[in-house]
Image: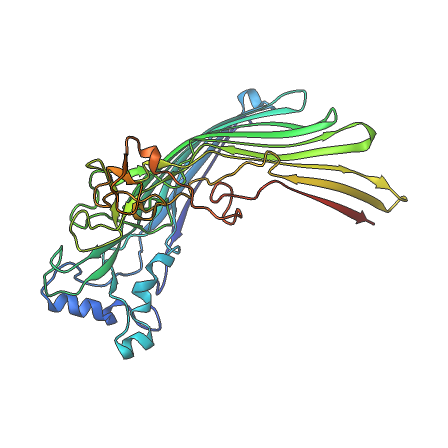
Length: 414
């Protein structure tokens, strides 16, 4: 619009064709639907169809005061649809494949007819400034609101459906989540023998769930089909990392040595403590949270341990000729030799290494097999027991992680 002010606006449209068709059959062929309707239940009155209203407007603006080459303000907002992350709905699709239809062996699972493509409403504002001495500052605030996300409802006989109806899993798109984050990046481009990028994020993410609470593309459960947004079902998501700091840097030392690092630090991630007891009496086991001293715990009420890992590399280039370079190096992983269980803690109160006196209402630990000697539970922190095995298999902060390790190497470039 002007040399100082830029606006970008757009409208995107998404749709699908045959999203709910598997092996040539739609959900009308699902035996669970016929059985449910034969019982007189009105829980599911039809089949889902491809969503046709996924219009997604978005706008972005940039403003450089007085056409500045060093300072810019940015802002943007938009809708973003995504209905292809449905691995959690596989039961409903396999129910209508040819083998299960012919043998009557499919799972009792349905997709709600009122399907709505999940979408995220996002908005962000940012500030960026380049300093004269090769330093750059970037500050960004981001808001994401997930709407019509996936949830799995487990209906049992006589609980939300007639007593003669079959138990059924019903997938709906009625979940919600919110993420707010403030990111600060400080960057120094290579000069004065070093370069560095430091990132800090302050964030908070919440959602609804039973024993697992994840963001956008995960199929969360419900504790009670009669009250899917009940007390204790709202809490931090599994991705709720309040503080995260990442440092990446390279430093050139005398005698042509070079030191580089990738260091990561984050605050503890949340997890939920479940119980095998049917606390709410809905006939479903596995969707209830633990009760401690008469009070049921809430979604992701527990926290694991902060994550900290420092990796370091020392190397030196040795020129063998004009076109051939030898680069020996030594690398150190988890330099501080820190255990990082993250939020990979025992999530089931009945699986704790020191058993509790009552998995329906834990008030004490049993110190012997007969539970005649007990230790009172005075804090929920007493229930935190790491469960991770060695190996950071699923990304930083998810398992115990690697111990300190070092390796030597040589790289020949020509």
